[in-house]
Length: 424
Image (cartoon, rainbow, N blue to C red; front, side, top):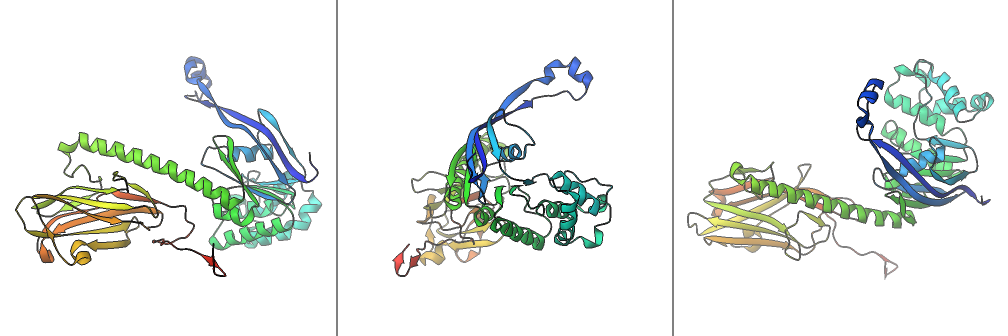
């Protein structure tokens, strides 16, 4: 092992038996032998990395990619099928918080037993006891049985023990959401202090911002392999781009399946095929919408877009009463009910739509600047002055916007930064 390293992981592989229909009792296992069928699932397919002493790294990836398995291998909760793991120094893990707690013992007694699991002597625990209790903010309850604690109190005590064992290597798995908001902030600041003190840290988390604040490097694990490594911000941008693409493909596939189902059941549906199941329609239908869709720059019907894409809304109508003029209005609501944009033809152009027997009106956004989120479209067509509502459909369908922008808000306008007059 290199003297500057705290952790060396070399080509580790790990698989698990996944039972398809496992018998629960001995009788079931004997009588229904076929129920014991299983498949071998390869979780890690050969990953290698090194962590220098005092360095902090983050492990990211979608659920089931192998992040937590890697951390459990580091803690020696489980062992690899092949490959090697070498670690130098006392290890503390924030994985299964409070795994060694006994419910009938007091908080104080559990501090001693849990800290002993981490390798501390009684003398060392005595020296840290006041700091552990103070950090947990459970002074009033420390001599009460742990079974009387709320889940938040339980996690506070367990976290306080784990971070006060003066470990040289700290392993953390998705446990930074401990207690209330103030205590979470306190825990996060404590982790920063631990890193500044030279502790080696490995974090598994879906909170990319937390990793970026603490870690020197990130590893993106995908399908049991390291897909990318390096500067956290750079790796995270690559990861988010891939995740956005996967999510878009999934949503588009689901939308296509739903629309096909609507077409099959068109005769039994009160709503048109292009409407979602949560749509609400009212009006005389003297002039009615025959199709409403969102399309991209290539004219393809889509329900998913990226911030900044070209997006057009197309409204097709049929005029049943030879009405001469009408106005079309639409509004876009965020899925939490906030109206983020509303417009109509007359307001934008200063004139009404000259109706034909059948026609189509469209509006194009050259760079649709909405932030990442889910939006709902409402549309209406009505007579001049709004005296007669011909057709109004609310929640007609969802538009999913994806973005790799780190900025937050509802609208993300195009912008450029400059530093001392030089564009960045």
